[in-house]
Image 1: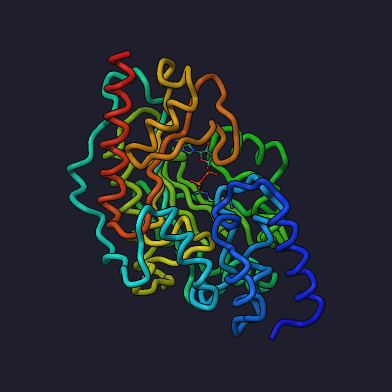
Image 2: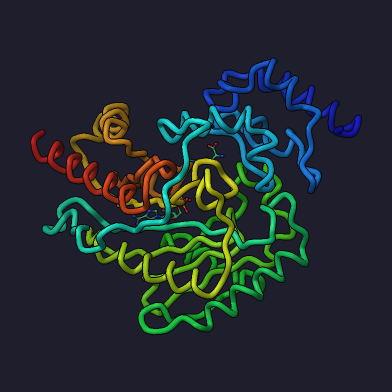
Length: 355
Ligand code: ADP
Ligand code: CIR
């Protein structure tokens, strides 16, 4: 059972959520019945429903609003997670299983904009959680540092194009950090959605970025997920970018053990990233389509694509550049997720040309 103070906070949180106009999936699916059923539960590590919902309660403009403090939360609080996961990933029932990891035929991916007319840059990322460690709200500072030490050992083994250097956030000057953020290489600091989820404690301990000299292969350490493996470059060569990400993910997988379960595939802190954990995106200018932002969003949604601003989630577009990526990551293979993005982007470009 949860303690009296948590029970009180949970009641207040639920009241606050019900009083908002939030369009989040949390608001949609946390009915009074589900709330009553889950409010007294706790995982072995002590995570409660409050840990799950507090980000969405504090931030009514959340799209989703929940995080999993530990892997067990996905089962303990399944009555809330399951319908949200089903809704976000466009169909993933209680009996569905994530297929085995399959990056697909790497030669089937193309340059989506060979004339360099629309696409500014292309990025593909995946997330990995180190086996034996919970997610942010359940980690202590020693564990953050321990995990950083483990992954530094993995980075030392990377060679060829993946070879690079690890830069801890601790000791990095604010100028260097801001330049890396502005150039889209590094995660931002002080994300209010993560902060409210208790994901930024002991910052900057154990956090950092690994990258090769060209900054085309990067790994984020201990931001939202334990690892974010990223490949990116200017232009629209999705095939080249994806191949590099797959090479990096394979090398890192060889050197470490990562959390996966039969139902959800690779486990992540946010339920939107479960399964393949893949987000393949372009920074793209589609001035005619984007003249009506609602139309851009609706057209992208038809192809299961999500539109974000230039500096990532919850940001605005700068100079007409949008970040457009696959929305679904669960219930399909890695190759299928990237193919869905490729097909959708090719269609959006076709539509833009026809306007
Ligand atoms: P995530 O790490 O979940 O993919 P964010 O939306 O926070 O998500 O984006 C992280 C960073 O990656 C931001 O700086 C964003 O601008 C950058 N980014 C995403 N897609 C691209 C892209 N195609 N080209 C360049 N930068 C990108
Ligand atoms: C939100 O609910 O808006 C944040 N917690 C972020 C959710 C992840 N975003 C997404 O759409 N993939």
